[in-house]
Each structure stands twice: as structure tokens, then as C-alpha cells.
Amino acid sequence: QRSSRCHALHEMSAGIPNAPVFRPTEEEWNSDPLTYIQFIRAKCKGFGIAKIVPPKSWQPAFSMKTDKPIISTRVQRIDRLGAHEMDKLTKDSGSQQPNDTPTQSVDDAAKPLDGKKLNVKRARKCRKCFQMGDPSQLAVCHDCGRTFHLHCIVPPLLEVPKEAWSCKDCVDFKKQYFGFGHGKVYTLDQYKARGDYFKRQWFNLPQSKEADSVAKKTVEKNFWRIVQRGKPDVEVEYGSELDVTELGSGFPLTGAYGEHPWNLNNLPKLEGSVLRHLDDIAGITIPWLYIGMCFSSFCWHNEDHYCYSISYNHKGSPKQWYGIPGDGAAKFEAMMKETYPELLAKQPDLLFQLVTLVSPTVLKKHKVPVCKAIHNPGEYIVTFPQAYHAGFNYGFNVAEAVNFACPDWVSWGSRAVERYREFRRVPVFSHDELLVRIAINNPTAENSAWIQAGLERLRDLEYSMRYDLYA
Image (cartoon, rainbow, N blue to C red; front, side, top):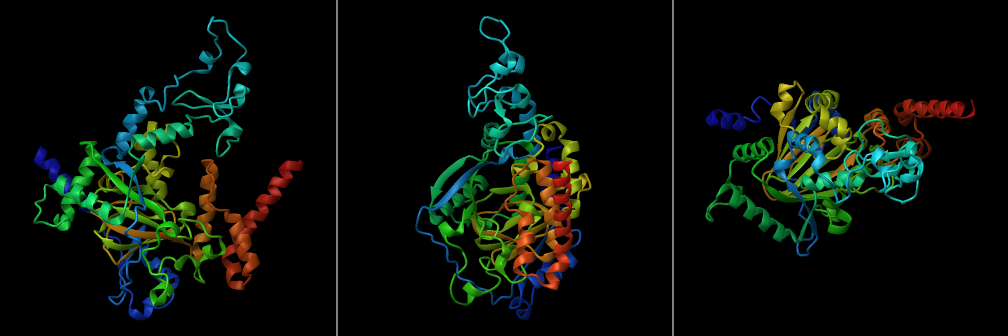
């Protein structure tokens, strides 16, 4: 039985199709990247991600600072990232509290020490401002029992949640439980040494062998075995979402490579990019760095506003990617609700939190379309609008990623805004303002063709809201 199980884990990616791989010519490489990505987009239907391998002439020097303690890491408990592990926490949440505050029901809070019932309206205080409040306008945290004025919650709620709701402290506590607390600060060399030491210890490598000598299939098997079994305890550190304005980009900022359109500091602001009409936003139009070690991972998520994204592996070990196409996103979300109903009922916005992993074999079993790609140094991975993606690192590496948007993204962006509204989430930028900026700053016939529907939607919504206001 054990042999059979190990074989199943070994075949974790068996039957999972590879994402499309594209190798642009020198001529294609030195032209507009967005035009090229739009060209390959048509060939990627049914895939959420694609790999782009540059010509051999593409050899930008790694330019990030390496001698200062600048890498602030996050701790990850790999054994707690599986959706089934989160489900266990949900069922046991009665004993999990973020602090020593006892859980109170509304009835309990209405009882003074002498047992006489008080007026509930005078007995309830908001945890944040400590002012009294009408209980009909207070949200009660399902986990800790504390109460909050709707207007004190960030972002504010328009009405009392009808389903189980968790306050920010409890959400943060759960993230800490799943190993997303603060790690140590390293120089790049110190972090590499820490990552190599972990990998050598885990795979029992002799000093004579390089840390990267372990076969990729072996690393993948071990990773998913930990996630699926929830044991043993495995803690790693990941330098994720690091601001290039503070650390420095991995790309040169001067010379031919500094000006090249495939340099991720330039790509979001190219002529054909919709996002060039935005102000600078870290992680959207300004790249983030991702500095990983073996088993450090990125959980299932799609990009803010359903944007495109592009990631470049500067140096080190490969990254393993898995992708779900945008038109398979609804099927993935439905599968999560059906498979983990209590978990999603209690945390409806779970997939926004980047804390959950489900193996590709489970997705395949539930007929969710999924593909895979190995992201080697010197290669790019592109994710398409609304595509869910996840993965892990095979060892120490340094990657850089940024968002961009081609004209076909506008309708996807509108869908993202509707989803944010459904889950009461604050958008990263105003989609409507972006459309208006494009109309004002670049009112060409070509632009009008792809922003017209969005502007008409905005106009109709404004008319409707004004009518409701004055009716």
C-alpha cells in the first residue's frame, strides 16, 4: 500500500499537460512584447499560463544589490497550506483564538455580573473605537466574538454580514497559523546559504553534491506529499513581494538592456499597455522581486483586477508553475465550494488570501483544466486574465514579476470589479477612472473601439444610481 501511494505521489504531474512554450526569433524579440503576447494568446486557449524562451543573445546582467541585509522574508509552514488542513482548522476553530479575549454571544454580552439583563443597545461596544452601538448595526466576528461598527471595519461594510464573518485580527491569526508570519532579514548570500542548507538537510545530500543535484520529480513528489499529508512540520522562508524601488531591480536600468522593452521595468508602460495610464503602483506597474528557497511556494490566486502578469527568473533554481485558464476559474471556484463547503462558507474570500493549495491531481479528478510549466533561469512565464496559478521553488532563485494589460483585458477588468463588489474588497485602482483617463489622454478611434463598452456601462450605472437617489 505504501509503495502504491508513493508511486501516486511520484506521478503527481502525470497526465497534466505542459503549458505552451514559445521561442521568439531575434526579430520578434526586438519588436513590441505586447504585440507578440497578443499573437501567442490565440494559441493558448485552454491554458492559464505560457512560457517564453528568449533568444540566446538575451543575457542581461543581474543587477540587484547583494551585500546588504535587504531581504525581509515571510515564514511558510508548507504542511499547513493544503486546503484540507485549512478545513481542519475551520472545524476546530472554536478552540483557536487570536488572543485571550473570551468568545461572547450577543445574549452573553447583554448580561451583567448580577445576572440581570441589560438593554442590548447600551451593552455592546465596538472593539475598534470602544463606543456603544446599536447591535443591529454591529458585525460580530464568528471566531472571537468581538463586535465592530460597520463603518469602523476597513473596508467599511454596508450591512451586517448574513454569513459567518471574521475580523482582520482573526484573518491575520489564521495566516500566522498557516505560516505567513514575519521571517528574518538576510543578505542575498545569507539567504542562499540558508536555503541550500535546508535542501541538503532535507534530502540528506553529502557535501560533495550540489544542492541542485536532486531530481525535479523527487522535489515535486516531496512537496506535494507534505502538502497532502499535512506532515511532517516543514518551515521555510520566502522573500516575496519585495519592492524593486528599495532593493533594486534584477534588470539593468541603463544601457541597451535598461531600455529594452522586455525589461520588466519598461513593459507595463509600453505604448500598447493599458496600464500606462495609471500612476505608479508597486506590484502592478512597478515590479516585485520574489526570492525563494526549496519548497517556498505561491498559493492559488489570480492577479489583481484579472490583469496579465509576466515573471522572469533571473538566476538560481527553476520554479514549478501550475495554471488554470480564465474560462476554467468558475469551475475551480465551484470545486472548492463543493469540496470544502464549511471552509468557504466561513471564509468566502479565501481565494483572495493566497494561503491555499490544492494539488493538480485533485483538480484533474474534478475535471478542472490545469497545466504545468517549469520556469528555468533566463525564461519568462506569462499568466493570462483571470487565470489561477500556483507553484513552488526547486531551490534558491531570484525572480521578478509585474502586471500589464493589453486592450482585450478591459472586459476582464470589469468582471474583476464586479467580483470585488460581491466580496466587498477594495480594488487596487479605479477601473472606471482608468477608462476615463484613456478616453481623455488618448482619444483615438482605435482606443474608442475597446473602451466604448466600459464607458457605456459606467454611464448607465451613473444614470441608474442617480435615478435611485432621487426617485
